[in-house]
Figure 1: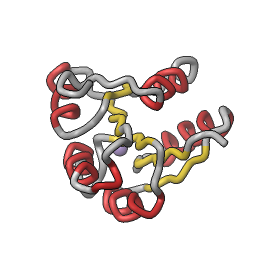
Figure 2: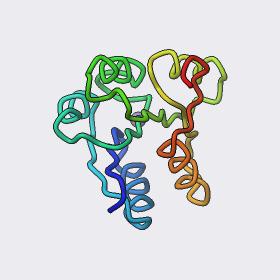
Figure 3: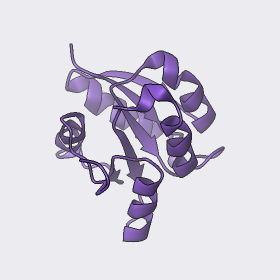
Figure 4: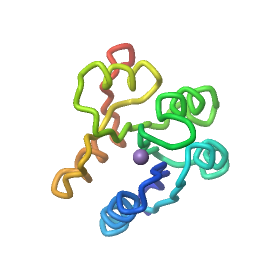
Length: 130
Ligand code: MN
């Protein structure tokens, strides 16, 4: 059985697209429509990876990443920022806050699964991690 992905994303159209692509490719999906929900369910969901929207209405994704990294359950879990921000500084901020890497919005359906797969297989954009 393929991995379970926790998707934290407040935009329902984006959530629909991400869930569609993941399920079409055999992944299991748990969705959270707010940062608080994602943080709360993370320890019990025990996902194999987190896809984390940065622009969330309640708590921004950078803070979500930090809070997830404070949990022991997140130790070996890739957290991938999904962000429309194209500025390199914002990518670095996501990495500094504990994200493993990032995928840019708008989601490219042709490359999205391969990008996620690389992180599931151990890719990291963080220079301080091996
Ligand atoms: Mn959003």
